Length: 81
Image (cartoon, rainbow, N blue to C red):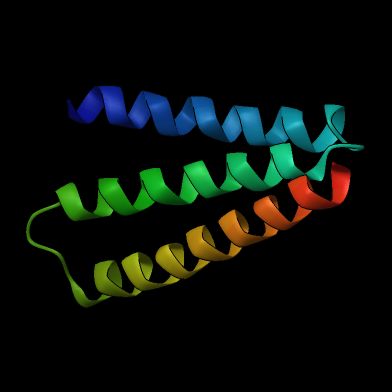
């Protein structure tokens, strides 16, 4: 499970890089890709045992970034429609 999650994080990071160049006219694709990456980073950090103080900071910041990118993505979808 751990190796699969790491490979999924790497694949999502590559998707974010491609989406930033290829889908310039569709910013919601980039927002949702970044939101997915932040969610995967939270899951990966929660899977680590024991979680240090730096881990808790990473969980907090990635959770805030996840919600922000999700809201921005939904707002961009409405603007495109």
